[in-house]
Length: 349
Image (cartoon, rainbow, N blue to C red; front, side, top):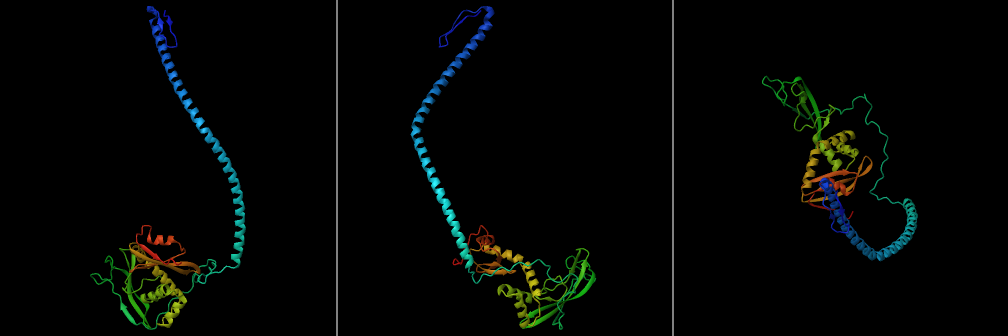
């Protein structure tokens, strides 16, 4: 049997010598006692730490209490001022709304539009252009006199038969054609008939036809076409001199004596824009790498609506671009965000 005499205030325990049969219980009690001593020391250290922290917080509270009082007074003053400013703001907004209504009425009553600004044409109901389906073809009349006869040769194989110029395969269904092209020379209309040959290629799976270098691109309508010079002249008068198609047809009739309708000029000019898409991109690349670019814009009408024609040029290149916007984003799209040259423009506008 084990007898323990110990004081919790730190006195050493007094023990009696354990009996042999109680050694196990003695060791267990000893370990429990040691753990209690460790917990007591930990509780004392924690009590000492918390006491110091409490005294520190009390001192800090005494220091911050006057500042909190002054801050509370300041907040109250600011809240009162906010209420006054909110009332003034509401009164000024109401006054601004009244003045805006009066100004809108006066501007609407006496609105002056600059002379160069035209009113937009109201959009018409969508209608299919041209004649109805199934109408008789309205083609250009065949000229009474053919001034030049040009035979366009075709490639021949070893036996003298017509073959494909791309893969030298013999052509089937060989036909001969008369492609009449009307072009202009100064004060005279030159009619040229190109005698071409076409055929179906079994290897390429294409229908091929001979074509002279000066012959205009093939048209969807197998009729008399306008020549390259006539198309270039019409495009120059339309884009450079900004003439309407009605005046262009009148000039072609008065100067060289070439009768042509407005639609026969408008459609080829639109096709020329498609042919020159590569040149447009090439000019833009040249301008983006140029050290200095000049820029200006002017009003432009498209289908009766106001737009802007932009002009960008350097000493060797000129690029025209039509856009609905007059903002700087058009210039950024044309020259790119990484343009490192000098851009000069008319700042008066």
